[in-house]
Image 1 (cartoon, rainbow, N blue to C red):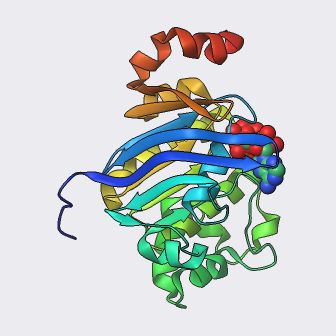
Image 2 (cartoon, protein in one colour; image 1 turned 90 degrees about the horizontal axis):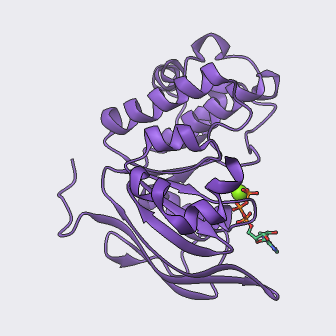
Length: 240
Ligand SMILES: Nc1ncnc2c1ncn2[C@@H]1O[C@H](COP(=O)(O)OP(=O)(O)OP(=O)(O)O)[C@@H](O)[C@H]1O
Ligand SMILES: [Mg+2]
């Protein structure tokens, strides 16, 4: 295991803003991600959640603000460099190699053709029987699980999951919750997860951050966030 950092902040996000033309997708967001935690990101459609992932993973340049990974600036780093530093993600709109088999998808991410290691990861997400099936042939929920395994295949320290349970049935959602918890313990990783299913997030996450119109309007334990009047007004209220 690597030596613990002086603080347990893995990623620090400071005064981060992103403008797309006249649209302020992120507005002075401050957020620290602690090593080992499951931090949830919730908020209405268009709140800026995916944009935050895109900035963290180097796909979108911030208009203002700083990102520090284990104390070092991420400014100007390319997505591949950021991935090599130990940040991996899944995409809201899946980005699998659709014609490749499940196992090949993992081997590409691992940068090796070690079949046994890839099979172990497939077993973790209960897809070992689909090892040689084309990714595109899987049911939608299984494709999400394959993306999850593929992100893990890069051996990240921080795993970012965008709409992890979208399109999953209630049983798959339960399984996913257990899987995220198991992966956190087994791989000793930190998880930042976006998901609209609030009850799942309340159970799964150590802390929740709430975005609304690009601003972080609340940050705290699920219980604190659930009771926050700003959150109820902006988001939870509309969900009953
Ligand atoms: N590349 C882009 N160019 C212009 N506008 C963009 C771009 N990406 C995102 N936006 C806009 O920025 C805002 C935030 O979008 P984002 O995708 O981050 O929201 P989100 O919180 O992930 O929403 P959802 O829950 O629907 O996935 C939206 O208004 C979106 O239309
Ligand atoms: Mg999104």
